[in-house]
Image 1 (cartoon, rainbow, N blue to C red):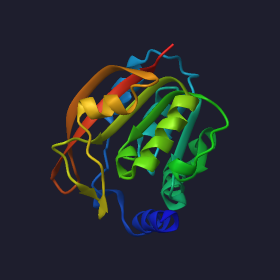
Image 2 (cartoon, rainbow, N blue to C red):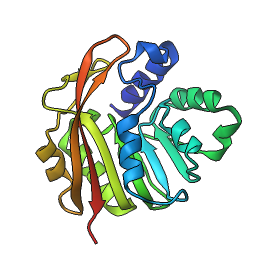
Image 3 (cartoon, rainbow, N blue to C red):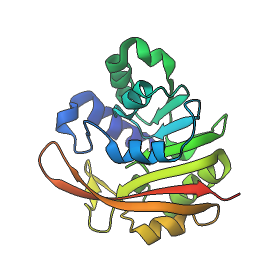
Image 4 (cartoon, rainbow, N blue to C red):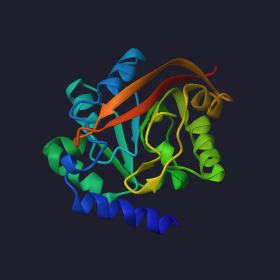
Length: 204
């Protein structure tokens, strides 16, 4: 199961360009807005989970953030991002890992996940993920998933849709909801995907 999931994503990133995959964003505006709204300083420890070759890291670097980690199951995805960033890639901590098997070595002030969490369709995977963030996120949790009005599949894989209340309930144990929004993402193929995007703060 885990191996085939990794193989799936390695193949996707090996064979497709950014304009050929639905999740590509020229500027991840909602993600950036939520990160800026945390009002944390530029030394905040930020991790982008399932970041792939997303341009979020480019914008964070340009904004002056100094402590960025990008995690993805696909080494090919991260290689693409490194190539795009050139010399700047050296400023980033790159981690190749399946999120359900991730063993963090530090806590994170901001945990950002756009469209990785919704690929976890088994309850056991969801609970593992929740356990990791409860232990290793010290500040803010920013998550974007397909909404109840969004697609039921992505990249040929089943996903789990979340309404605002479902996403909130998933992390209610240790996080309080600060803000949620619905967002229509226009894919490179001009189709629309509706997302639920939420930012939570760790309960003191």
